[in-house]
Each structure stands twice: as C-alpha cells, then as structure tokens.
Length: 252
Image (cartoon, rainbow, N blue to C red; front, side, top):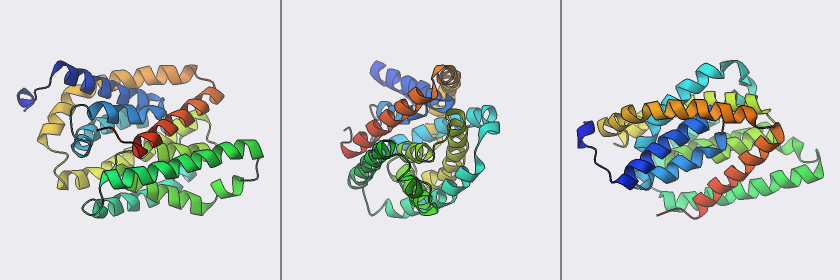
C-alpha cells in the first residue's frame, strides 16, 4: 500500500513535519495541536486530512498515557470527557448538514471570546472563578470539544482553554490532556472509518510516519520540562488563540 503513496518533496516535508509536530504536541507542547493540521492540509483537503492525522494522534496518545499516567486529575478528566463523547456523536450527525467552513468560524469566534474572558479574569482576580469552575461550563466545553474534533479536527484549543480555566498545573494539564485525547481519538475511529476517512491508505502512511511521532514525543517532553509554569501557560494561551484564528480564517 505504501508504494502507492506519492508526494512531491514539499508534500513529504509537510507530512514528516506534521508527524513530528504531533509528537511534540503529545510530549508536552500541547498548544502545537494546530500545526500538524496546517501541515497535512498542504497535501490533503481539510476533511480528508483528518483520516491521515487520526492514526498518528493515537500513536502519540499511547506514548503520552504511558509516561503521564500518574499526573492525571481524574475529576477534570471525567467532567470534560462524557460531554465530549456526546459531542463527537453529535458532530458526526451534523457532518452531512454543516460544513467545516460554516462551523469553524463560529467555534473560532467563541474561543476568541473565551480567551478575552480568561484575560479579563486575570485582571479581575477571582471574581469570574465561579463561572469557569462550574459544572455547566465544563459540560458546554466538553460538547464543544467533541463537536469541534469531529467536524473541524480542532478540539485542542477548546480543551486547552478549559484546562487553563480550571488552573491545572503544567504536568497535570499535560497528563489529563493525554488521557482525554486518547479516549476521544479512539472513540472517533469508527466514525472516521464509516465516513471513509480512516482507511488502509491512511493507516499505511501512519505506519511509516509513526517513528517520527515517537521521536517528536520525547523532544516535546524535554522542552516542556524546561518551561516554567507561567511561560507554559502563556505559550498555551497564545497557541490557543492561533488555533482559534485558524478556525475563523481557514487555510485553503
């Protein structure tokens, strides 16, 4: 099957760079989730690229849950996970009725609005904490993350903003994110396969690119260990903003 995969030099640079970026993201630089999406979009249409990215995400997830299994905050995990699973199923049912170009900008503007509120929260002290720490906020963000990952392959900005909003320390955020996306990505596989996006072709490419994901994972872990908490939070918030802008003004 691999022998049937032919890319230009630019195409190979894009997919290998995307695989490394997935590893960096899973290793600890969790804000980089938008980068592989952009790189794979150089080679594949946005919708089809999700089928190629998904197997590589699972490889990165397996590395992450093995390394970060002891730092998961399970209360936060369950708060976000159950509504996200429902959001994936809801997103699947909507895929024939709503396009990524219609859905993406809406989610992007919502994320940018929440980032503004998050920044206002840092200026106002604890006055807005009750909103971010409420069960209703977690439920809404979970459904939004599930729908976004199914339709636009961009749940990272939504989930990361929620993890920041409940003030998870760096390693707890990385560990909780690892388990959250591991379960979500496994849950997405049958939906993606039913849509014909994950298939023998995408699995074949994923098999060859998997070592780059693993290499990137350990690079991301090393870099995350060097980042102080404040720099990590700022980096994640900036990357979340970039992800939101990508949804508002999609490439291609």
